[in-house]
Amino acid sequence: MSDECIFCKIIKGEIPCNKVLENDKFLAFHDINPVTKVHILVIPKNHVANIAHLTEEKAAYVEGILPFIKDVAKEAGLSADGYRVVFNTGAKAGQSVFHLHAHILGGQELGWPEI
Ligand code: 5GP
Ligand code: ZN
Image (cartoon, rainbow, N blue to C red; front, side):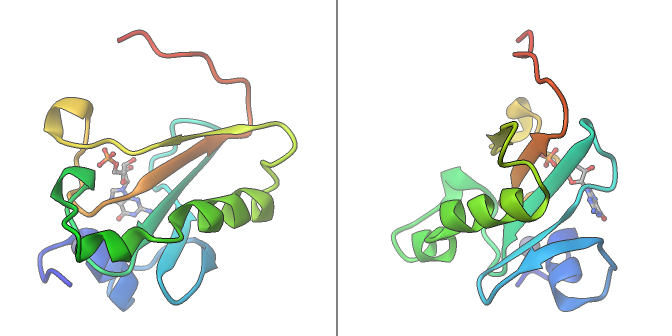
């Protein structure tokens, strides 16, 4: 846990969220500022800044995240039509919250972004 981290505060219940699914390791909730019709964030309950900060020990924090994302997408009704999973890693890649998270984007046709 990191005292200053907004996503750690959501995990602790200090900031509310619109929850989709939760298990012992991960929490999924709707993004407060969705960029697609369905926009869900998946976070590990243990704090790590992003993929670049994963050590051998911290890699355990995200073990099982892909099967969890699969369950979240099913819960949100995205499985049939497809969805995109994005991990912004670092400020230059658009990361603004430095607690590792997956964006699940769907509910509409998705173009491939201009870089
Ligand atoms: P990033 O830009 O770091 O990849 O993504 C951070 C995401 O967190 C953004 O899409 C932003 O809208 C979302 N976000 C930031 N603060 C909150 C919050 O307090 N609650 C929720 N549900 N989403 C948040
Ligand atoms: Zn955190």
